[in-house]
Amino acid sequence: MKKYTIAASLLVATSLAGCAAGPNYIAPAPPPAAQGSFVGSQSPEVTTAMPDNDWWRLYDDPVLNGLVADALAANTDVRVAVARMERARANLRGSRSDTLPQTAVNGTVTYGRVAQSQSLPGIDRERRTVDGEFSVNYEVDLFGRVRRGIEASRADLAAAQEDADAVRVTVVADTVRAYVDAASAAEQLAVAQSTVDLLDHSVRITDARFQRGLNQRLDVIRLNQLREQQAAIMPTLQTTRDAALFRLAVLTGRAPQDLPQAARERTITPDVRQPIPVGDGRTLLARRPDVKAAERRLAADTARIGVATADLYPRITLGGSVGTTALGDTAVFGGGPLRWLLGPLISWAFPNQEAIRARIGGAKADVHADLATFDGTVLRALEETETALSAYRNALLRKARLAAAREAADRAARVSIARQSRGEIDALDVLDAQRTLAQSETDYAQATRAVAFAQVDLFRALGGSWQGQAGKVVAGTGSPAG
Image 1 (cartoon, rainbow, N blue to C red):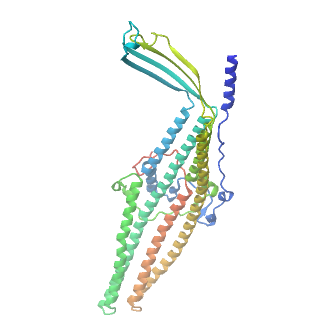
Image 2: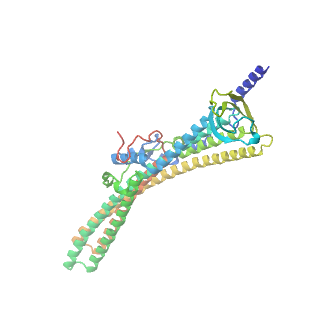
């Protein structure tokens, strides 16, 4: 009869083991409109082709490629994110260990003296006691508490991996932006120097005419004033360039003075001279690490509802132990009979389960918050991408118009100098033409920088993934390993 009872109990336990408490996770679906084409993808500056994770290679700059590789390998923020990912992986291993029997070996050695009233005649009151025991315990996961815990830990690990990719997206974008900033400042310095040289030429012509009595002293002073104003821009640009280079060094895991010389030599603003592939809303949501991390956190907290719900039901642990105790000089094993214990342990918080139901309610509230966070992350991803597309399109339009204005100002300045040399116009007209040209050159250089920054912002908004690439580059080399 006992055998049939045990067999029936095992059959019931096996059938129940297929069930897990709590809701089964169903991934949320973004709104259909969020998965269509972007509002700003109809312009010729972009294409709906699938974006590339290694987007910085579109600049076709080997130095930049090496700096990005160094940043992915040695940046301190990336290292922190990878360490957090390893912690999540360790937590998953810990959760999986709950599916295995838990074993323990205990042993004690004591030496003492008992009271005379507690000692039998002829027995030594002082003695040594040696005790050893080996125990095994295994939780029968009838209601899926352990399985839901593993499910939550696995989702936590996936979220940590996506968080690490989000950090990589930011670090790569910041690295490219710093490189662009340094090169742009160098280009603006060259433009400023060219403007100063042109004004020096105008000052010499005007001064020569003044010496011949054809111009007034005030004309020379005004041109000199404009020349000094343009020269005063250069220290600010040099500060900007230095700050960008120092930032680039730190982003690639270096001290500022250790930045490779090759990174300092670029004097032309990098530019992608082809339509940028941006995909559509569906590919965006599949690429954005923050969206994927929000979805994985929702999955983890949904599983934790099951962990909390399983506490409503009995927890059954099968266990056993074997041990022995030796007194005095008796051998530990073989000196006396072994003791053993075998049987199930049932624990059940019943009937007062209000605390458990409170934890379930808290877990459900976390899921509601996670769902709202996911929805908000999807909307922000779309907003950032549409904003970046608009900014890039308008930055290109502004640059094109400023290029036309710069060409017109350059022609006007050259004509004014030629006419001045022939005495056809006075120095005030020349000064006005030179001032307009200087401003046009400055505006165009800044527009070129704005286009480059808009490109980086667009690539950042499109997201990306580099899981599995850590360790494939050598830090500090300025180039990919191999």
